[in-house]
Image (cartoon, rainbow, N blue to C red; front, side, top):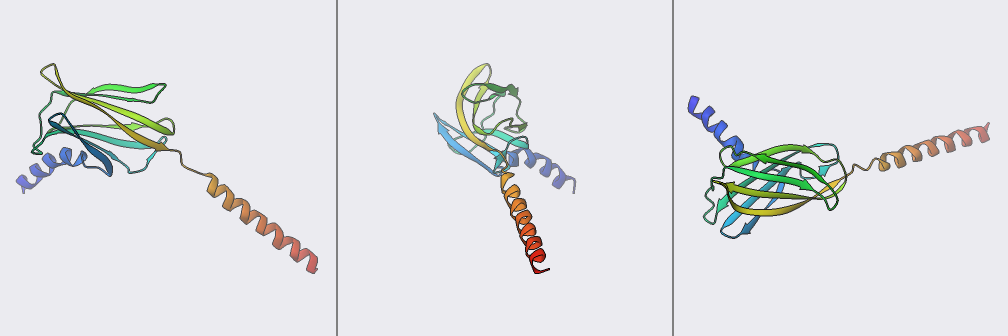
Length: 153
C-alpha cells in the first residue's frame, strides 16, 4: 500500500504537464512540453500552467529552473523562476485581461541556457450578454402577455 501512495505522489507532478490543453514544440534537440488547464482560459479565473523538457527519446531532461514570463505586446504581467519537481515546473495564474498572451519559458541547467521558447495562449472574457438577451426577451414576453390580458378584459 505504501508503494502505491509513493507512486501516486511521484506521478502527480508529471501529470501536471499533460493538462487540458497545450502543445509540444521541438526545438534544437529538445521537446518542450507546455500544458494548461482549463482548456478555455478565462479572465480572472485560476489557470494552471506547467512546463517540462524532454529529449528526442521522450526522456525527461533535468533542469535547475525554468524562467517564465507572461506578457502581451504592451505589458509584462508576470516573471519568475520556477523550480522543477520531477522534471515539471508549474504555477497557478489568473489572467487579468482578454486577448493573446505570450508565455516565454527558458530552461536553465548549471547557469547555462538549454532552450527558450514562447508559447501563445488566448484568454477569453465570459460573455454575460447572452444571459441579458434571454432576460430581456423574457421580460418583453411577460409584457406582451400582460397587454393581451388587459385587451381581453
